[in-house]
Length: 388
Image: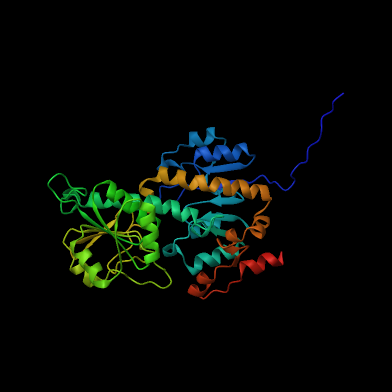
């Protein structure tokens, strides 16, 4: 008679307990995990605890999370999960709710970072991973890329909105009409955000100029676009002339927050047309414009020398549901893979790209740039992995 065969069982798999707290910042509408992704995690044997109203700003109800299999809890209980997924890093108050040796995934905006924050996480032996430093097997940064796509598209919508008279602009249509010239859009940078800003602006009928200090990146952008595009290196004379005639400027250049240099000086701003709109997508790293000031979605603009500055770092939160879905689509594979390895330590040993995203490991600071910036001691994450 045929008999049942006992198949091999992967004992390394581990059931994960995941916590999804609500964001404390009222201007942050994104959520790290959508109900659809929670359903996938539950079906794979993991437990998910969601704080009440965690997805409300992204139009996800507690009922949707509950039907997906999540446990709806109060704030204190949510922070007792083994793994915490957030958009913004935990506040100092939230760190006090956390337990020892937890794992935290979040973005790490430098404008929210402080040495006190690092010390508080270290005191609880927390392991912290920054979304924006996670690499995939193709060498790209998936979280940065997907948010840059959203930011690039939104930046043109914002420019179009603030060019209207009701928002204090010049009262012009971005794309123009028959017999009327379209608006001129200057895009600084040639990365993902710049590409999607250019695509959106061209799609709306605007005249687009793209400037970057790398001819190689401009060539890559031109190849991706599929249409002929005005591109130029950042020659001062040509750049300033373009700014003087621009109706909208999109600052999408990469800015090193630790070695900040402004590409648009205040003197250049003074020569620009009144009512011009600048959307500074680089504001989370200090901004590409000397006159930019960090703002929020509740109060997004500042006007200087007659030029409207839109300087919101989490601009993707204007479309929180789309952004949440994009983040969750990337996170789900990350979480499932972690469960397959059985522990974060096992995964980190085999994935050098993920190790680069860890900035605190069991309470030990491992990011040299953060350590040097705040004069804090740090250790090499690769050496720590070798020691275990």
